[in-house]
Image (cartoon, rainbow, N blue to C red):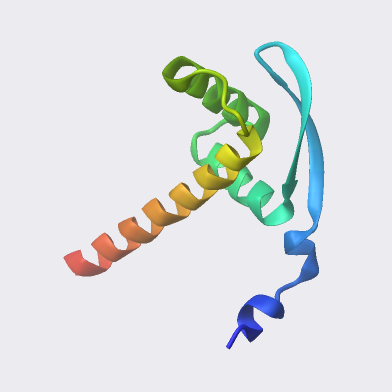
Length: 97
């Protein structure tokens, strides 16, 4: 039942730490590689680097909700939201055919 999940390349769920600046402060973020790949795709779609995308997202969250209690969780959920929206767009395209 779970072979497709259990059999995935371990590099996908290995963690990588990247250093960047948020609001002028140097910080590091540790995420699984699959999430970094999705964030890289999101940033590329918007024509910016991944650090610029993450910094912009952080600034917008600060403006709307204040300091997030767990920014890495917010990034993971942003990746899931992107995938949900992408799946919805794919289904809309199929429905239009």
